[in-house]
Image (cartoon, rainbow, N blue to C red; front, side):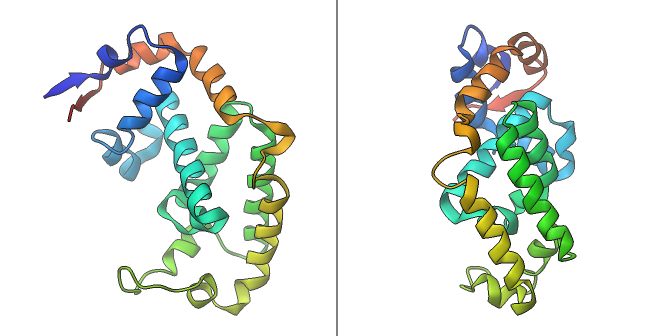
Length: 186
């Protein structure tokens, strides 16, 4: 059964809206929209999607889990998402990491592309995939992430509080665009 997202969001708190939308980020139509043109996704949904992807990848696999994964392909958009919610410390750290990658002539697209040709579920280390030449870059990135992203966010930023504030200020906009999207209920 398909239903309008609007009906699922009506009367909800910002946290409930975030949780509801986060439930649908990997379902149609948003899954296809992310793969084809992430900027076609309404800003508020995109912000939730990108922050949820980063936080999950980072928590499970660290900074390289994010950068090497398909989520890392959206590094610029992820930086923008954190900028939209005013998470300046995270923005600064991710911009520094992007700069380190750039100084080595690489990008998340390059890192992801290095996985082409590997067998599905093949177990390899980052050095096996990217070679020794990127090892100093990996060490610099890991050191940068360790300074600010592991365990605490920069300046004690509460990403959930910032995201709640961001969504709370945009409820009317969310209600408006949510009328145009339908999701399958399970």
